[in-house]
Image (cartoon, rainbow, N blue to C red; front, side):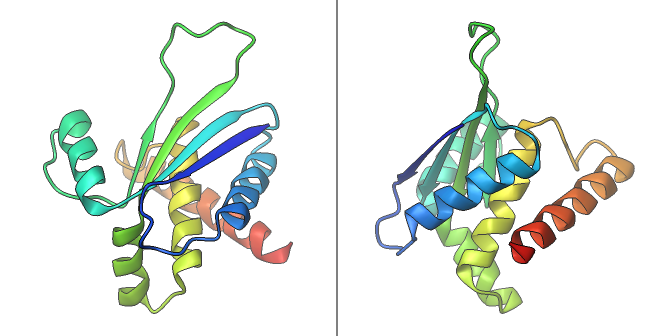
Length: 144
């Protein structure tokens, strides 16, 4: 498995190696051992541009997921890209009185599940399934 992490939000101190290891563990838990994943940590300005361009929502969001295009060779198992706004994560963490790394972990789980086809916006049942799986993964990470 290959996980690449790019920090485009340098004013925030994120333990990149620890974050990468969490991503690898999440992929293991989801039986995605051959997956290739790219993670980008950005600020609100950057994620707002992406959200406007790809979702027609001109506002910052916390996490975006971009699956790969359909023209990849079949031997490549590129899962896609997850983009997280560290600024939004910080706001949520303060609001819910959680540590920033815990909020980042939740957003990472959420983004990866979107890449695997889970979508809480399709229906209330899909949202319930996704939330259940998010909690299960979070518990498994805490037990390790």
